[in-house]
Image (cartoon, rainbow, N blue to C red; front, side, top):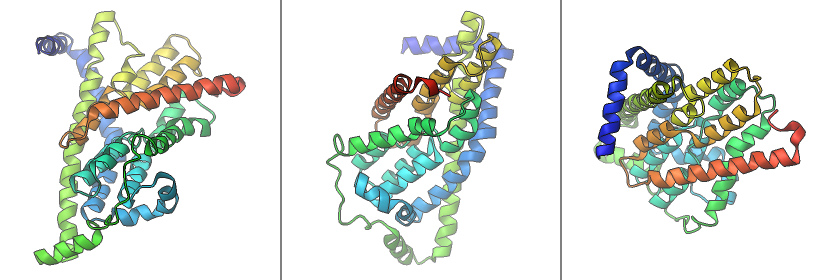
Length: 327
């Protein structure tokens, strides 16, 4: 506790003594939250929250269930969490898993399984921001590195560590039929319940977004300490604190130092940092699952494993096809 107290007092002192610099880093986090996180994440949070509350997830999962069910041997609600986690991106994966688990629509083992591989950087963010930033021409190899490896990792886990997960025959007990029955018991119409759950979903989503914004500001602000100690930001540390602002710092530093825009080391480090997600992503995941008995420590271990596997993928690419490596 004494160490933490000293660290927080040191950070407070740095903020007070370098107010202009601290304002810059805090404003960077706030701007990223407002410009990137809110428009790209809040609508998905609200809509997914409504679907979970209305018990419509098993219907939505039917889009991919015929393909996913034979491979991963999971129930429809688990399939829905996989769909949202991969399409909507971080931290929607953790948010959806927590929503389903808290409402008894999946069991703990299923929630732990989903957290192991379904909470990654979103494909829209990856293709529209990350790949253009690091100047890559190819797309498919990077999509495989970002999403194919987690999918294969999840498949391997299903038949090893999580092979005990069963497909219970009563998987629809808490589905839409139970929701309709609950409405009848309360004497309210489906339309009234829809309005009620929409209101609840908006409130919960806005509260979650405010929390995520706080984490983005805090972890961008932590760049203040190495900036003061070393006379400037540490480009390799920044993405490990907060991924979006950190990647921009990394590539700005690479260009300022005269390195070519297609610098291989910076690109590889960026791709591995995207796989890991950074400390801010871990903290935001904890904010999504902190109200349950799900372990953020297990989540971090799986992220480290996925980052290591991603590194092996790029190493294999380098040895097998060096001419196209990181194009």
